[in-house]
Amino acid sequence: MQEFGQAAWNLAPEKRITEADACSAIQYGTETLDAGLFRSRWERATRSERRMLYAMASDADAPSATASIAQRMSLQPSSLGLYRAALISKRLVYAPEHGQIAYTVPGMAGHVNRHHDQLDSEA
Image 1: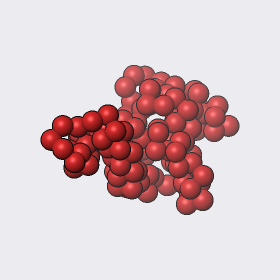
Image 2: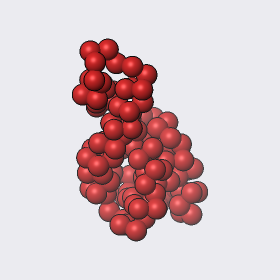
Image 3: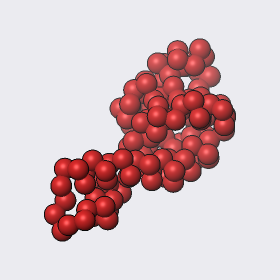
Image 4: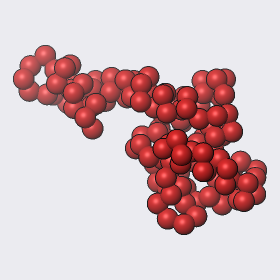
């Protein structure tokens, strides 16, 4: 929200923010977050951990069931423990409830989905 609000104020030519200014701010703010916050978080994950982050993106920013993530990755749920622990240690995800995992930063799923092809080539 802060990134989008700052972008709206910076992009608005008048003291009043118009709908067009807000739309531009959303695009600019998203690009800024993608290039900075989200990218730096993605780069902290290993290739295997990135596979898990990508599998989570199907659930948007809602918590993902570890059984669903394992199925998407063609793994047994018990195989996710090391990836899960590493991602929690890196503060990229957290466990809101038993059997669930979620991104720590809202919007991360959108970043992964928007840049999936690019991110795959980097992994």
